[in-house]
Image 1 (cartoon, rainbow, N blue to C red):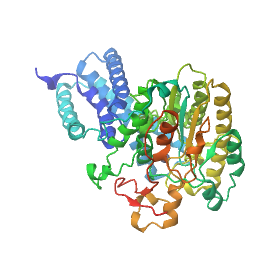
Image 2: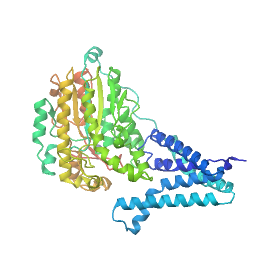
Image 3: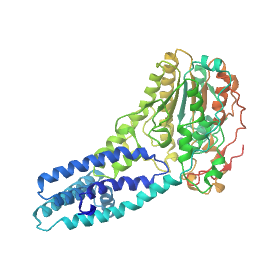
Image 4: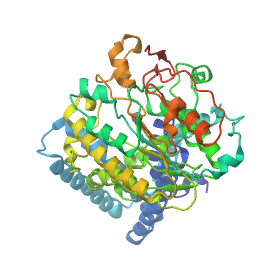
Length: 506
Ligand SMILES: [Zn+2]
């Protein structure tokens, strides 16, 4: 009796969709994201198998039925897509209801047929084993070859630690790096969105903030922008290292998690805190000393939720996730207030996907119904919704800042910064960047950039400061660092060719 006789295929059928989805997202998703789905798949397959053993006296029959159940479980999105082509359902609820009933009927029919059958099922076990093993081979090879050819991080090496240790260790200011995704600059809000943000900006200034009114991001995408700001350097060397055709995000992701700024602060005795964002590089961070994560359905581990959305659980899970997503956003603000009360020096990285679409809130924070919040390439064009969500973001920022300032024993350092601006036309990022108009480039890189630097630290700032200099300024002023400020430059690239940059002239 060889391996092909063994009851293996249900486990492989359960693993296959996870591996398949993973290979299609390998550049954005860490391998660790697959662990929980793997464990769940293994546990549920075992439970199913044991349950069917009570129904069937025959092991091969139980194994066959287990695999059929698993295939039906994962085929839900394929079934609903197929049913879209006949388009007879009034709403997605009725469609889901019919599709669930359809899947269950097939399962029952199969279960009964197998029960009644007098055939020998050992052949089925053998052929199922051969079939799924062949199928699973391809994603396995993809994953192995991907990790085998992966290059190491390029920036490890000399980490300049600020000079005067005594001064550095005396400083007790907590540091908050709060990234407000896609928050554009005041003038663009006025000219493009017809919204006057002066009240909020003046309010921040009254609290002691310096708002850089002519700030631009150094890069136009979340991951290139943060990899640069957190490492205090231009990252154009990546186009030589990876090639301008590459869309591999691994290195910038690694640079965001294990950044130069975080390394220096850790060496100065800071606790590195990561507020999990639900998005790629700022979600789970193995280099952080402390992590906070929203634990509801809105947890928004992208890989996990994409996986679940393809299964029969989708009609139940998806509305729960959508409802919970707004709670996940608010959670970050609440945690920020809490961090201020912690003992010891903390460096907090909080990437908040606001006012970036999807649009979850109106200006008062009322949730927007799930069906109206689609996040696609035209979402930036929904100007009213953007402004509404931005207004609510302002309210949450004000509230959070007040509380942080009130409960910090030593005045904190707070950076409120966008990673990039808004997207002027649908799919700008998909287009030939050399044809994108100057004003469209300008809009994408115009950012909101505000600093609370106690003890007169604002004297180091200027209105056109870019994120690459953010931590240079902070290290120089508060930790006796010796970083020369870099010339403020901006580069543009699109999502397909993130390392193929053009310079955006001033
Ligand atoms: Zn972004």
